Image (cartoon, rainbow, N blue to C red; front, side, top):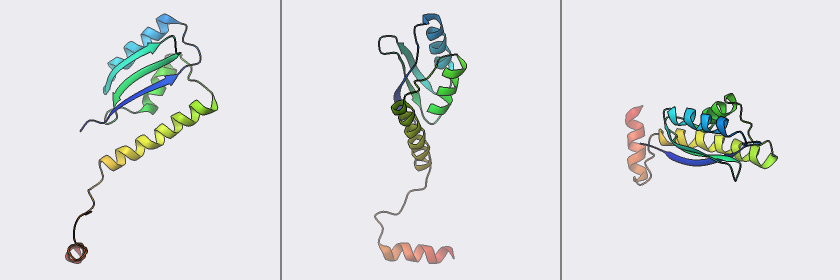
Length: 116
């Protein structure tokens, strides 16, 4: 099951067009990346990815390794950290066993007793 995410990350300085195009190429080669583009007007990189295969933390590492600087503003850092947190939870929930939400309480208790 694919978990598709669409995100953008603000960059400090994205005037270097060759470097921007290079990072887009590197990102698109990564397993799980669906699309990536540099928006020079907004000063950000926009991308889509499958959370099952790659996460925002790994994407940020790739961007930093390419020499681009992520926005250091308090709001942008908080937003990225919140996204890391929610992605971890989403992955854990996606792989968690389903809860017996609609079962009768007596049935749940009987199944629990059978396991012991």
